[in-house]
Length: 144
Image (cartoon, rainbow, N blue to C red; front, side, top):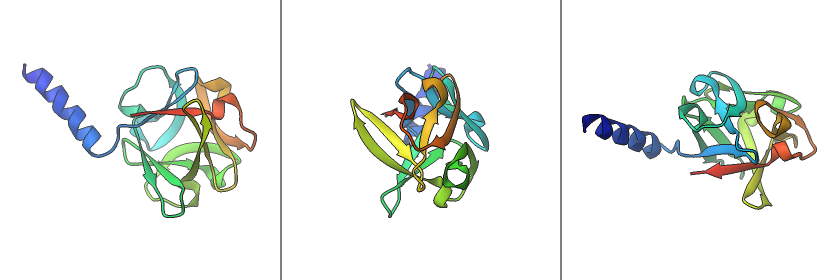
C-alpha cells in the first residue's frame, strides 16, 4: 500500500511542476534528454519515462522554450543548421522554438533561422536541426 502511495505522489509532484508533456514522432519514438538533460537528445525511446518528459514554456515573442525534466533547455547549436542538445539552463535565441500545427494533431518546431527539429528516419536514433525542409521526422505529437 505504501509503495503505491509513493508512486502516486511522485507522479503528482512531477506533473505539478509542468513536466507532463511528451513529444513523439509519428512512428512512436519519444524525444528524450539523456539523464533528463545535461547532454544528448535523441528519439530512441519507445516507452515514456522521466527522460521523455518536457515542459513547453511560452515566450513573449510567441516562441516556446522546451525544458527537460532535469531543468535543461532543448537547444539548436547556432540557432539551427546542426546539432541539438539539452545542455543549457538559460533561455537564449538557440533555446527558442516556433511551434506550428501541420494537421492531424502534428506540430513542427522550428528555430529562429527556420531549421526544423527532426528525428532522423522518423525516430529510432538521432535528432537534429539541420534542414529547412520539412520531413516526416519533423512532425511531432504532444502527449499530456
